[in-house]
Image (cartoon, rainbow, N blue to C red; front, side, top):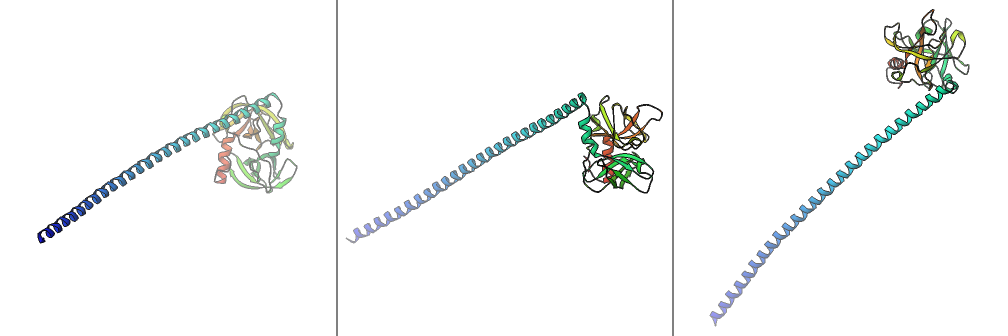
Length: 284
């Protein structure tokens, strides 16, 4: 009887050990399977994340390219539209008279006066900066400008460029002003207008054409426009305008004893000189 009981104990113990071993084995296999599953899930998630990130990056690049192309197209369209509008304006002015251009431009022109001389000038900023010839303001203790609305206003000299015979003046207040054109775009034969104060006759307008470009001036630099516009004493410092009403030069001198041979300093040289006086880019 005792032998049977011992054999039963051994059998039960063996069964328990077997179940424990089986449970441990199953647990280990389940853990391995679970770890492998988690690894696969993580790998799939990583792949999906990478895939969607790449898709988003490609989408962003495509949108950026489309945006850049659209911006370039719009810029070209605006530039072309501005060019067309300017050419239409030039064409209309060439076929008609200059009255509409002069009506707007003359308000930006001034007479420049000292006790020794009378010349012309033009306003280049809304806050009253004026450009004229240096020889107009070179002598004299008092300096005044006469605006188009017949107001005499004291002026002060801000700076000068003796080489190019330019002076920058300043008056207080707000005024209509004129813009500088790009003189590199000028062509011989194009019509131009001079506004000034010849012989003290305020705000006189004369018309002509560009006879030549890049003529050498008294300073030895080839930066003068030759025109057949009628110029007289008092025109010095006044603007030479294109048919859009923009400044292409400043009337400077004429050949004595000759008819219709006048010279104006190119607008790009004016811009360079005035910005140098300011010490920064003020006039674009």
